[in-house]
Length: 289
Ligand code: ADP
Ligand code: MG
Figure (cartoon, helix red, strand yellow):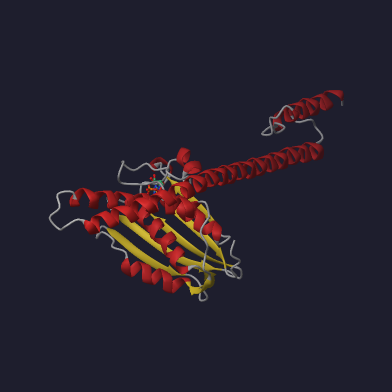
């Protein structure tokens, strides 16, 4: 009996030292089958709980990091917004005063164009920081998707599928902003399939939520990039090609709707078909944040 208890004691020590994977090996079992089994079950459920805690912790850290980034972004954006407005106003005034053949005209137009770009970036940051308001109204998500799909230009190498999985896709949303969410997700999906592939846009829903699901069969997202995906200015695209604001803005809009956005992706061909799915979940009854 002492020998058997020793085996159990060793196992207990393994678990308390943090080795939650530890299971009593069948060959060396203590001889009390019932106790062995419940011991192993206990170890397993400890491990499960530990995994869930770890995941929750990671999620909270991510949310907190995005929130503090948002605060900083909003601060900077607010400060920059006014002077940019001033530059635009005065450069437009100067341009108006210039004759059509004025030698400085071209340069002035460039200044205005670039300042406009800055304004867009700043407005993207304000979106990310949820400093913009949503104008909620009952909207049929299926109609919204159909409308966006008509206006999107997709290369011929990409097969487009639209699937409506629910009869009732009406929710209180800000249609203009959800159009922006969808456009951002589709633009990214297309960029991930330079060699072609399939783009699937799905609507879905249950009693309390509607969902927008965008799937591509593209290159996928490496694991190490997943935590940074929604941060402003995170991009893997060439300078000038991507701003890294698309998903940050998308995240901000979804959060303003009190919704949720999830990503699933595989970038490793050895681990099965590559590709990415973004799932946006929005509450049916809107409560503007
Ligand atoms: P941008 O498109 O300007 O780079 P985003 O915020 O829209 O900025 O996206 C950030 C990065 O996330 C992209 O540069 C890309 O690396 C990755 N990404 C986003 N969507 C996808 C997708 N569907 N497939 C693969 N990578 C993606
Ligand atoms: Mg993008």
